[in-house]
Length: 364
Image (cartoon, rainbow, N blue to C red):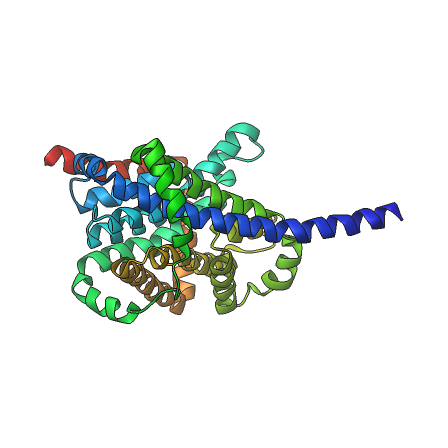
């Protein structure tokens, strides 16, 4: 009897705390976006001087956001920061595009680093085995976003007006951030622009982490049982990845749900690939939402351009699914089996974005 009563109490508490936690995460996210915009505008002169020293060109913007995703372990925060800098006229549209794209390139690699740290602490598996999920995610992300970045930057800038026309009028119909303007302004005036800027970044990061914690309390076993039994069907797997990530705006949740199945061999790599591709598209939805909330028409068009190109490249990969999977699996196997190739790969994760930042500064 007491066990039944305890279960009832747990369900009641969970059903109450989950909505409250979700609302709290949403409110803190919106306030963080407003504070970030207010602080960025106030700190524009100082930030402009810093960006002039670091960002020596478009390549530097790409490398900086790539490294920033490593440092914050969250690509969404870096993308939101890039949008805030753009709305303060501190970045060009091309640099915004590259920074959002770089946030996706960097966010994928952090999973590899987390797996490496887990190996150092437990050593239950070999190093390659401990990062296998992150390695696969990284390969899939870069196989899509590297061509997307090149295509969007080199070919489509002249068509940005088309994306601007498509997204014209996109908005929420109200200004959700207006409620936070007085408090954000008061904080910025009291502590100063730069401290307020750092507080905003911390709040943005914390709100996304809080949302992940709220989602962690969801009954993932039920979700896996109802949804992830259909992974053998390519387009269904892709749709589930897109839906779960788009609805939760959390790659940590959508990939975290599937990790136990992958680690235990219940899901094959070939079945997981379409799901991860869908998740990589869904993760751009929260960035698009930030652009809409910040009321930046050009920012919305730029993010939508990235989303549209990524969708096209992803659908093209899925159209030749069997051949695409064979290539990805072959590269994945090589990295997992060849220690030298694996080490070179991990080193390249740092060297490439660092070179994008340093080389233009040295040459310039």
